[in-house]
Length: 396
Image 1 (cartoon, rainbow, N blue to C red):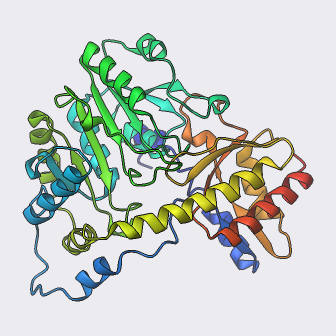
Image 2 (tube, rainbow, N blue to C red; image 1 turned 180 degrees about the vertical axis):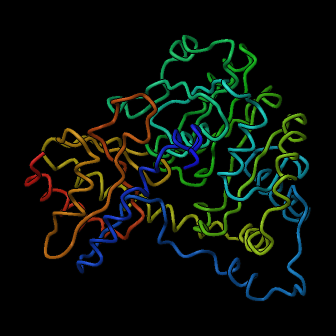
């Protein structure tokens, strides 16, 4: 039998999706499953985006430009200007989701065997993108004890080697919900300039900043143009995960020219999804005000209920809609599977994402889970009650 590639064998499973077969068995057993495992918002997509597709006047569903349609990129640039990010349409490549933007970024700045430093825990698919690109992730650990704040810059400097090409952050963070301060971004900007590295910022949750805090983009920082790359997406901002539209943004013309070659190789981003995403840019601020108010209420409800469970520790998110929760269990993978296979309260159970998959350091995060508070408050209350009952009965 032909053999599978080492790259394929090394490709990690998604900690978010690998438990799906057990959830499907739970459905077949007529159980209700509360999904706390995946960042699929239940917020309605903007009606203008949906209408734009329904009312299109296209006669041919044709290719668009590899970098994305000109009108859409111009409107994205205006969106960034409103957010104090001074970029133009030529600084933007529209991608098939933020995922493709990350792949284009890694392909453009790193060769096989090169290294990218990432504070962990981090978005689990960074592991997959790095494996696909032949890039080595070098983790610097942030800890729940200080709410996953930026590790000391000295910890980054210890890890820089001749193979280091970039530092990658997610801000606000998935899976922690941590929002980096302006001062933390400035420290990162200083270190990449000092060591001639790229600073890649996954900013897809930019709008979701709480408690009076505001997001500070890397491209707001002076002198960062040659070093900074933004990864962005419509998925969470407009609750349009299925559109699969994102973008790569940089003021460095070499990065854009190189990423465009990757974009040309896959021809173009999807046409209908660009139409929807262009219309979504007209979404009024009131939409985000309502969404943020909803997420803050959900966060506060979730965190207060979790903190009341004996032995549970919670990182309090400042943005996005995730938190890391430390449980009094030895192995959260086993616990998450047991929840779906062997436990329910009146026919109801919970699906969570084991957090070890959000780390690249072996053995770290094994007693943690990620929770996405994308369910209505009433469902969150029920889900945490089930989790509390499960922890009281769990044999592990």
